[in-house]
Length: 134
Image (tube, rainbow, N blue to C red; front, side, top):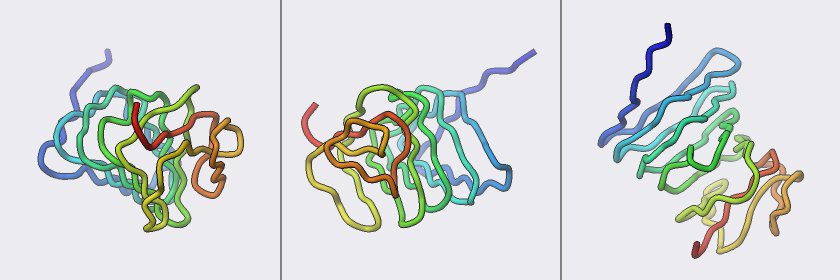
């Protein structure tokens, strides 16, 4: 029997420093905190998120299975880290910072996307992120 539980992140960030090759968070994430991805492994967000804090990918790969897994916060990707966008279409972000630099309005993605700005060093998968008005 599976147990469902809500992952509540309130006022503080959830930090993930994994040892296992892949960790999936399928439950919902909610609250005012953010998510910090560290560790060389791969973390998958596949649940619905309403987080308002930032998603920060410092090392390894953070895979987003659907746009609803992003929440409403900004995204930061450090040098050497990757954001894997495993969905069709685009998700609008309030801001995007890559390797310490805030990116301008535009559509960003990996080699397999139809994004205007392809950044395969930081993105993989068919999905895209858009900075700017919805």
